Length: 377
Image (cartoon, rainbow, N blue to C red; front, side):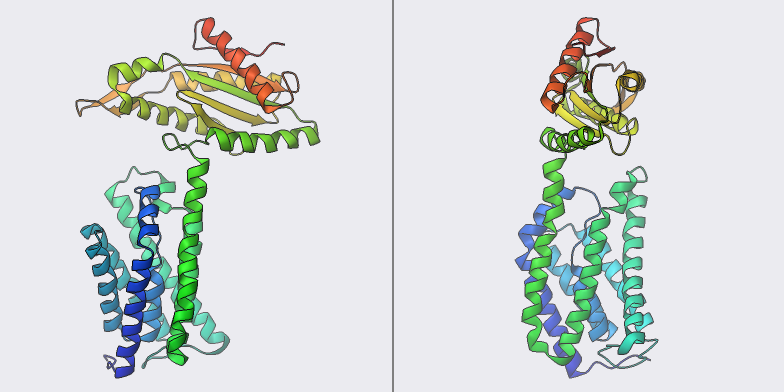
């Protein structure tokens, strides 16, 4: 049985539509920046706030109408049409599933604001269903569009899903406000704008910490984190290893195949360095084709073995790249020279360890490259 649309429903719909458009207009620059910093990965916005509030406040046809308003506005502002069509489709299915849960306690009539602890359980259930349907559809579409994407790119940053939970909670707040005191929506809008600005924080943090070409730590953040590890090593009287790595004859890759191919080789080497180190090791790009690794708890007996294993793995790399002639090509014959230093034998400051490892790296290159050398005092 279709729920009739009443004048109160239209009023709530109008307030939600106006709020959604004002919100999206106010945060256009923030969203543009987030899209540029996220690239092709999973990007969370606060659209679910308005759609979930509508699911609680107005009949489903008006929820679909609000979905149309929100995504038509995005398309008008220059967003990709096919992406917005798919996003709109998810925002039709997700509230439909949520409403099915809500109607377990209130089969007819809007707004739906369940009361008491049982009502809270129903609201949490409806929000969970809304999130799960939306998330599963988006992740499924990304996998189908490119099955080879890294899992971390497809699944997105877990902190983004906390933002979705906050948005759904605000959606409940909007629905309650629309029911009992619609004029207070302006106050809640301040919270929405503050939350949206907070969405930028992880992106700024990531940009400050991560090298854009390789995904490794920037040298600045590496030094900061290495300083903390060094303090810890001093307190515990633990050893600490530092590796300096330089790709041999890397300029030849750039000269022969172009800088874009060189960048792909850098990314492949960075991925290999990540796979050959522990989660708590610090792997950074030192500059150009140089990398640096800090190995907590690693002494002289282990550091040479670790460095030689990394050197051997990189020598086995075969990197499938896009050639300048738009034909796939394979780059092999990659080699790396590595210099190693260990605290406390080679120094007790980060700069001293880097200097010692750099001297060992120079010795490795002078000896013929594709080899490991330990620092000597």
